Image 1: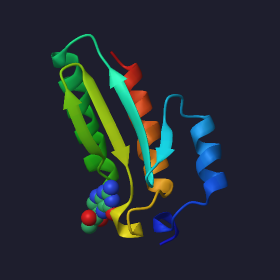
Image 2 (image 1 turned 120 degrees about the vertical axis):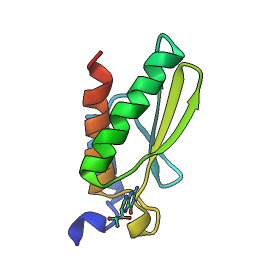
Image 3 (image 1 turned 60 degrees about the vertical axis):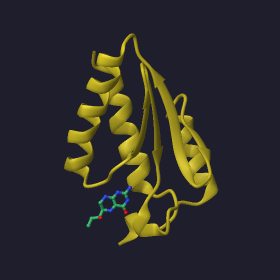
Image 4 (image 1 turned 30 degrees about the vertical axis):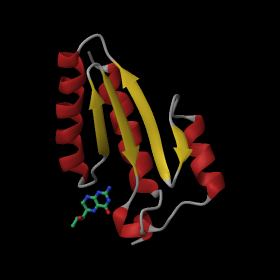
Length: 99
Ligand SMILES: C[C@H](O)[C@H](O)[C@H]1CNC2=NC(N)=NC(=O)C2=N1
């Protein structure tokens, strides 16, 4: 399936141009979101969980109080960034804007 092929560096950079705050490092797309409270941060995580299940693609999640750090990579592509990670990052951006 083409979606599980690793993206070329140029494709990753193109995608990142439309994903403010996201970076590419260690074969992952990463971003840290900061909220007003722990409750908001956990709410964000729960909404991501539903989206991840819909997409059948799951982020690595790390939470400290009001911060949530996400790392996206595709296990099925040998832990490389694929179009599925870009799709999930876009979905997460939409979720982050809905308060
Ligand atoms: C069977 C199922 O499609 C796979 O296990 C899915 C589930 N979620 C996944 N999430 C991520 N991040 N990478 C995967 O390769 C992946 N594979």
